[in-house]
Amino acid sequence: MKPILLATLLILLSSSGQAAGTSKVTVSVRGAHCAACARAIRGQLAKFKGVKFVADDLKPGESPQYFSDPFEMQVGRTLDTGIGAVAKLVAAAKTPHRDDIPPRLNLVLFTDFTIDEVSVSRLREELLPINGVLVNEPGGLGGRPKDGFFWIRLEPAGGAELREIVDGAKKAVAVRLREEE
Ligand SMILES: [Zn+2]
Image (cartoon, rainbow, N blue to C red; front, side, top):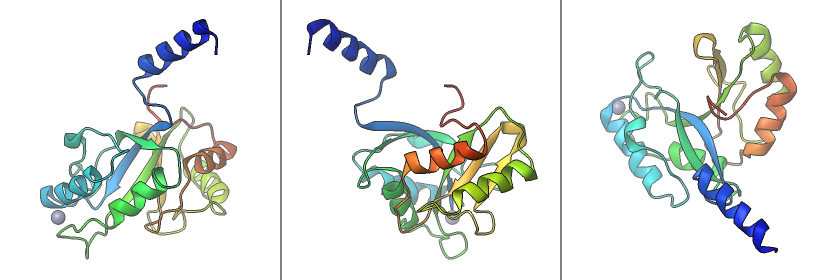
């Protein structure tokens, strides 16, 4: 590699603040039922070396309370460290209320387009054949128009692949992984 190219690459890497081979995504956690449940999920995620997030972001939300608000997380890009592996880990968290609200990871995708029944059902249709997503479960996929995002529940068995989900979603509606991009 020519020195000038290498220098550019290093600047790009440091300016994004992101290590090579990782992606920044926005997620929300279902099952952050109370402070103790949220703590159990945080503890579970802390075991995962490739995952980075601000611990305080993972807490019970406003309404419904057992969903955390969306927050950014850094994940790997391979099947072992990617979004599916993180979803599997979240689902295994021993939260005190897991019998009432089993913990699950939701991928959050932002859009500038109108979120309504039509766009939600178009999105569901495109994501149905894709591995690792639970878009047909009650509450497994939905949209919050006022905040401009869709959520997609990920399967506890893992197997979800970020690229595949995003490419599928983009056939239905223009989406992005983070609120500002
Ligand atoms: Zn709880």
